[in-house]
Length: 171
Image 1: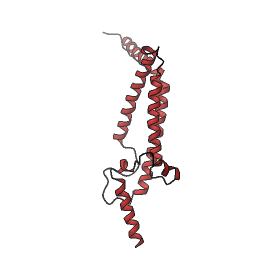
Image 2: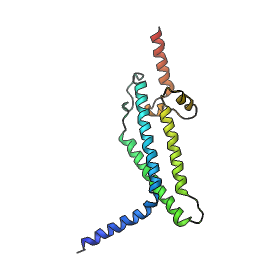
Image 3: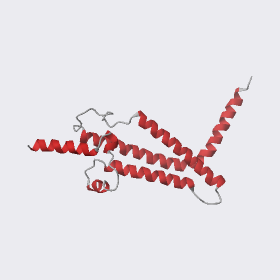
Image 4: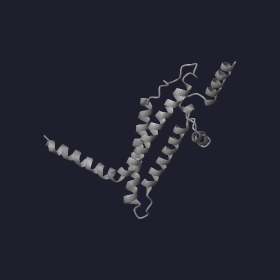
């Protein structure tokens, strides 16, 4: 029979080895996590603005509820994507330290910067969608409008329905 302390030592050694590989990447992972949380918050705010603005515009039932809540499939996709990002950052950090140490490449820094840039663009898209501010209208000329993604319907259809409703109200 095996000693139970032997199993605990093996588990502790495996966790220690895992920590040795993850620990140098913690700063990068933290920055990416912070960017992800801000993007989630702005996406929630965007969803609420779209819901408030176009609630009455739909004559047919939508493909998904229009309540501005986070859905489990989206959350699972986000967790999976972030897990892959963590593995990539750990690999880049490992490559920087052990394989390409003489080249001074900073792969983990570059990967973190690229991810944060993508999240920053997404944050700008979220904040400018269905926002009546002047800066948001100016920004919509540069970035995408996320209304179509939230409703799975063309924005032109929503705007046409809204214009028709305004014209019938004027008559």
